[in-house]
Image (cartoon, rainbow, N blue to C red):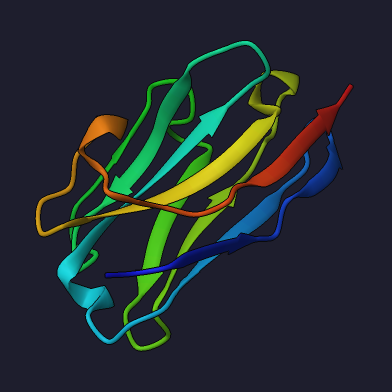
Length: 123
């Protein structure tokens, strides 16, 4: 089992940057693929990015490709989401999630979730 705690959200202007962190408990973090998802008010939870257990493979939603970067540090049990060139439509609650072994873009395939961190991009 793994517990996840996100941090790093906040208010930023259009074009600015933020780095989200997700700290995981437990000694088996390196066995979990990790994902970032986001949910805007009144909308579904959408896939943002995912990373493999080793960090060697990543995938991104088209809406963030080229602006966001997912990475992980297995020694620190932490996954990151570097967000650059932020737009108002990036405003959402951002969640990190974990699943055993294989990464996925489907939220329903993740069994562990953090509580979320709010990102607000002002124009």
